[in-house]
Image 1 (cartoon, rainbow over the protein chains, first blue to last red):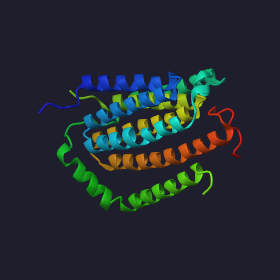
Image 2: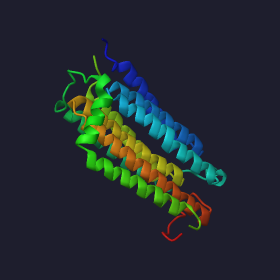
Image 3: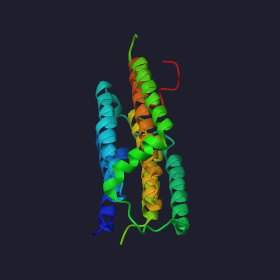
Image 4: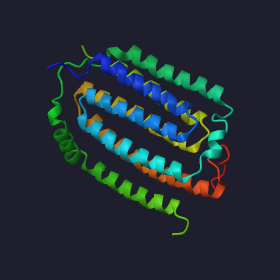
Length: 169
Length: 101
């Protein structure tokens, strides 16, 4: 069986992710930024498939591209964006910000490239047909308490969102 | 021939830096929120790549918890954006300089 993780797909998907990540910054209209972010999320889902995590890829598409980004688009349509999309998009200290971000990214890349000897090379391959089953076994045995805490956190977030967004309760 | 782990980590670092840049530089509060999602996704990518290369599923489990936190944060944050826009009539983050609504 040929591996799915061919370098061509990696470069293709990462080029899409980087270009649409740049478009998130450079687009004036927030709707265009949201669509570019959806492209980034979908290409990251493809990268998860290449990393033998099909369940994470499915959840990424359903929850991020289908849930959170739809929420973003709803809010963009609720608020009026005409005035803000005509304004200048970047604030005054963008030179310093770009320099600091370049230093941060360069530091991370330097660490990853210099330290690549300690990372393992992949030899065996996780059986991808069992991925969902293994994830569920881990999630409901070892990580049961964090799972319940996460459900409680979602409940608190729902109540908080309603309290914040409503004018009068 | 497979792609080595450090390539995924470098891609994740670049995406994280793009998110940081957008977070610091942009003026529109909705785009600032999107850049937070971009940073969380970059971290998720490094989690999944470490999980694949060390043959442990714990990294993939952590991705689910990061997604839960991202969903909660997006819901509350967008509600705050709606409340701020209702009282101030602006999305410019430089003009929202008081915690008072």
